[in-house]
Length: 434
Image (cartoon, rainbow, N blue to C red; front, top):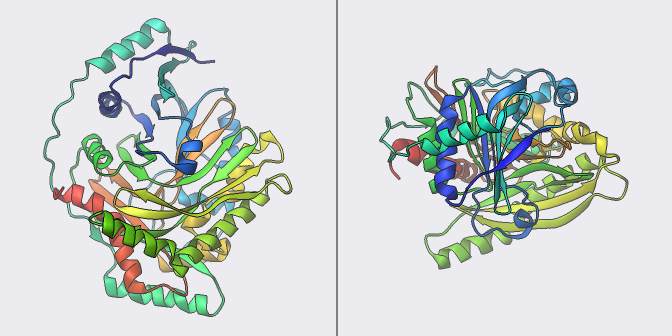
């Protein structure tokens, strides 16, 4: 059982920057932070933590999903991720795509030596008394407070380039729509990758730049050896509290306007778009069906349908689906029944995954997976790995993927532009244009 000591987090911005820089001293570290300003609706009501940070691994696991429950059996906190390619275990399908450019384990969780959590104005440092004590904990805090923050230095300017041309993208979307017109599938999330080689970036400084430009509710910084994840995700995959589980599928995107009037026009177009609403409703229905596999009969309920939420640079259409588990011990079953999330596959899910493997030119790896935490009570909260930069420091390789929902109503050229919109902020940061 962890012991806790209070931390002064009165200057949360400085404290977060120190935590981020501190990750450089550990082989394993994860920082999860809610940066969304002006919390509204479901994002506000479901918020439980403002920050969770783990440093150093007392135990880590990167094996099969079937072993996950046994490996995280300690009554302690675990932080980690699930890669999209975990589908190969949960939904066995032959794979033909190339290996991901930056290859992370299909799942990875660790029990941290040092755990910091902030919620409701209180900030605490937790340690395992079998490994540390109050003296070593205070030494850790003293070292953390001693970190000198410096002005961000300029890094090598990097151009993330799309891995597929606009003409090839359009031809592929038209081929996907042939399947839709034949009734083979209703909707598919088709993604494209942006890449750069020989890239020398400072991951911690780059993440701070991303936070500054795009404050999101599920921002995450992951360090595993010399591989990094810099995520600014707006989407919740799945949250469990006791027997209650909730998912917030996101489908439907529009750019923010240059001023209030343009903002209002874009929002009106989004909320009145038959196409965007249909995209979200199809995936919301898929999520309802997934949750029903593990839910108590009659408890699956759509709390909000097609709510339009403002985020930096984009509006997003979000629905909220809630259910009650048949029994509390089914925490891993809830993940198995719903992963990968429908918003990143399509409907029907099995056929969508087959076509994704056929039409995308690489395995997704961690992109389209989930990042989050598991509590001592085996509650959890996971984000969807979108708006996420992956970096292999040893290979000096960068990867950023973006996608959109393809339906019968999709305009291939507009879908290509949507992918560019979703990648624009990170591309501009790396290129030094913001």
